[in-house]
Length: 237
Ligand code: SF4
Image (cartoon, rainbow, N blue to C red; front, side):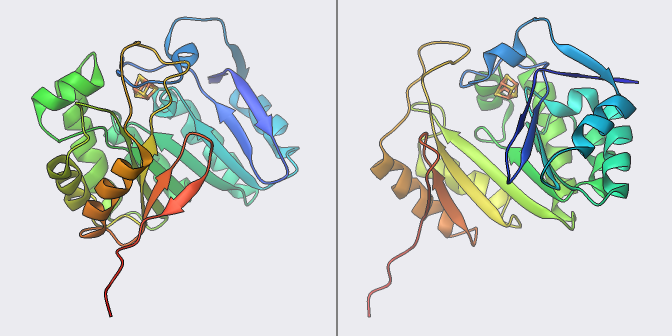
């Protein structure tokens, strides 16, 4: 079995493996190079395992694209990595609920994207192709994640006109109130798949974050410069 990948970025803290391929075509996708057809490296599961085993760190983060599009091969890779004591983090759009279920015994941290209100119309707008099928996968992923024993991260990238309202953030954060961290991410217009999306100000993101704080314990803003800011309700004394 082979794994297709685009890049392996190694640092002292974490090794990131970028996996290409995604059945969706989201408005706010900022990894078009992984979503569009392209030429990528391909290695057998064991071969890739031997490469990753040489990492300076024991933490490996699998990013996409949609990593779980290669769910079967990842399952084999994760088993090998886990046996060597690696900490495994994976991000996913939630499209592949079943695959998420079978890889998670070997995963320590799941970062799930929830793009907007969980209804077919809004998800159709956010998720490009297959919005309705996307939603059924996402419901499975959310239901499954609720009982996941590792770290549960959920994130929403805030896009003007798509999800920048208190009602939508309230709805999403109620669905994922079990998560350990909820990140509202700043939209980065550079390098996006479909031009024309717009983000909102950091002040507005903070207002939306305060709404999420009503349902989720740890809410953060993740800015496009990489900074992460905790959102906190100021209580009067
Ligand atoms: S943002 Fe959408 S299109 Fe881009 S990788 Fe994620 S799920 Fe796929």
